[in-house]
Length: 149
Length: 175
Image (tube, rainbow over all chains, first blue to last red; front, top):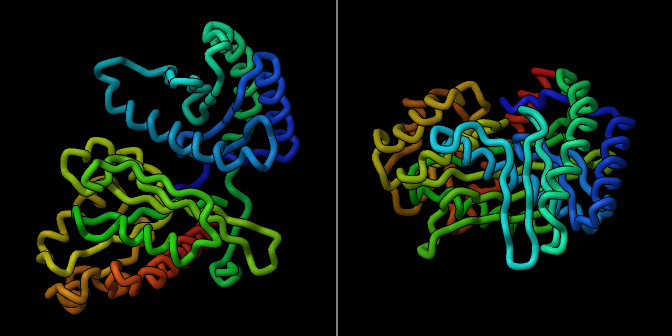
């Protein structure tokens, strides 16, 4: 069963979103997505509704690619990050801990070295917030009869 | 709340067809559709339909992600992540193939430790196949079974609703 093994309080989620926004602004990134290893979107920046669909897509595909690369571990040893170079934009995905990962989408004008440097500090900040959420089970339950389906 | 429902079965059993039909049936609920396929239209890795469903009161929303597994044997290595996080399972059985062949797909379910996951059987291709619901019931006991012709949309929504109900009931029981 896919029992979600963490739950973030509203205050923690707000704090995480604020840190993602600061990280995004400091490097002029296009999009920052925090997701779990199952591809669930935790938060993203810029935190506006119009970005949510693409953030969700980045979350699923990012986690799936990381999951697939697991099968190559005997070739590359344990993975830590992945870099995708597109024609116009790049994406850098790195693992914060065993459960969460961060994807940064940015133009070629932003040096990869800066992204690597800044994400280290952000990772440390996020890890302490995310660690406290681990072990708290999911609270919301919905009955099938309650769905507008 | 976020649910992941997996459609698994032999290659060409109709897994992707189920997702395509659900996309049409529940078009108002679709939040994304991702399908990574070969030039022949065969699923390689990701075949996902994301739905956002509100409660009748409108105060809650659940996300439901429907995944299929790549049917071809050579893509088996990519299945670990897909099989890894599942709340509900639809085993799509192909009526045109023998029970023994279909059971091979179920063996994989057991291999990945999903035999405790809420499951619904869909007996697909009822318009052309010979495998009967009775034969399937003998093999699977009281697991919910839906007869379908997925290409015509028959039984597709019923299967989805059945597995969603099973998954939510299981969550409620566990919670």
